[in-house]
Image: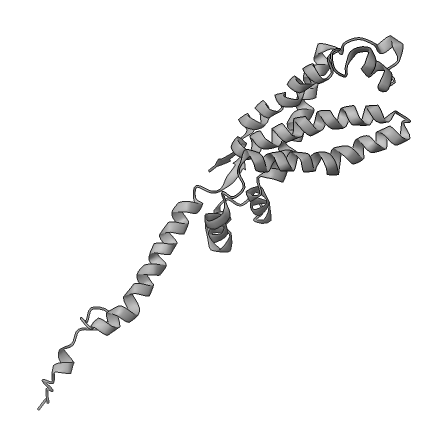
Length: 214
């Protein structure tokens, strides 16, 4: 004969579906919180994988080119004055060939990419993850990008980094040229002023618009 215990406790549903208010309050809210956080992080980080906007970088390459048209004009620091301070041989006096001028745009594009790496700090996180966009969407990298991925993407921030790049890269490079090629300090100051303005403007443009999300 099988004994059947008709005690009320035997008819309680399993823990997952039982209507126990305390169990519900203890287990369900943390589960829902984790689920919501996971969804938010996934939603946000899938739009925070930043890569260079090469169209903006290419456009910013025209900034030094355009500035040079005015900076090195005869009314400012070009013409005979430039030939003198740069110690240009007489047979090379006169304007540069158009082909050489446009080839400088390639060098400007390299400079634009360097400024991107300085100003858009999310590129550093992307580099630390080995350029793996999928790795940027999960784990610590995903959470970090969700919280900080869009920090400091302003014109002002890029302007500061443009000044920084001028002081730590352009100044030493042209300083060496000035010293060892025995040029005057006017040569250093004219070039330094030119690149200070050019890189500051490039930094502002690139920090504000030179990135894109994938």
